[in-house]
Length: 147
Image (cartoon, rainbow, N blue to C red; front, side, top):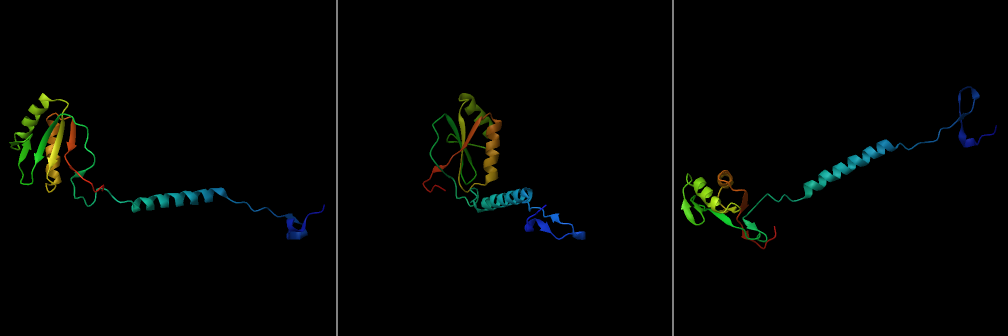
């Protein structure tokens, strides 16, 4: 029996042993690749700009197709107007219910001043929803900034 010299290694008691061939383990390599993939995905998310931070709104994009609408205006001084008629906080629900009964498919548009507190706008939206508004929209000014 004749073996090539690279296949023979030193052994105990003078018996030649065959040298095992080196293997590349693929499982740890796959684990490392997945770790790098997750790392770069999370890192890339931190690079994206958050759209909801630092708003000077309301400015919007293209207007939506026209549908019957009931407009609830919330000026900065705190009064409420439904389709141009001033109402009190207590009468808002009944007034909206009456307007929505006349036009059941109408969109309730909440047009608030940009300096009105968010909680106030949400409160009016909840009142509109309780009065039967199936569709709500936020009134904005068409802007050209594209941000």
